[in-house]
Length: 151
Image (tube, rainbow, N blue to C red; front, side, top):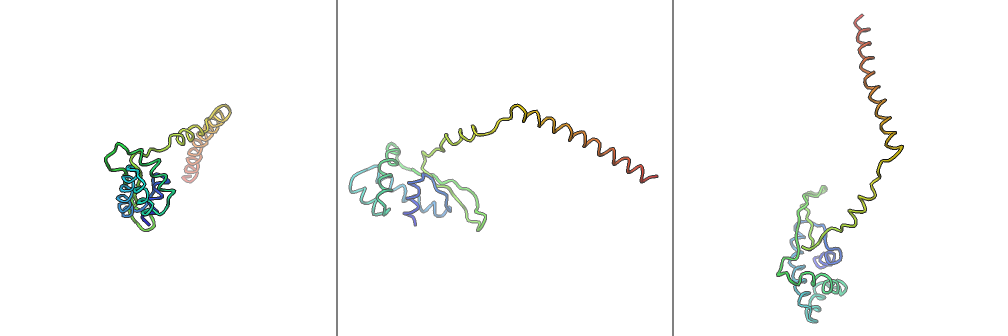
């Protein structure tokens, strides 16, 4: 299970899991990054024996380990997310320290927001005015009924 979770971390750069599993995955992931920084054939074979998947090891050695070449340790971070709704297990997010959210997605969502121009803006102002008038008329009718009830 831990090897699969480290593989998912290598592929996706961040995973959501329980806090206990995240704390268990962290040492294995950091040791594998240290092996990747050394980069010899022996270290590659050790990493394959721990992960069981040579594709993950290739990504680890070519993409992830070089990013941490100057860093002495502490390659992952664990962020607590609160409790899961179904069984109240404490959830956490484990990710590489240098992971940053893609900025392209944020810009695209901001660009897709519709802007109100032309008739749409005019129609909304027209719709608001009758609602205010109707609201002011309703209390008058209510007062008349009260007067009728008194007589």
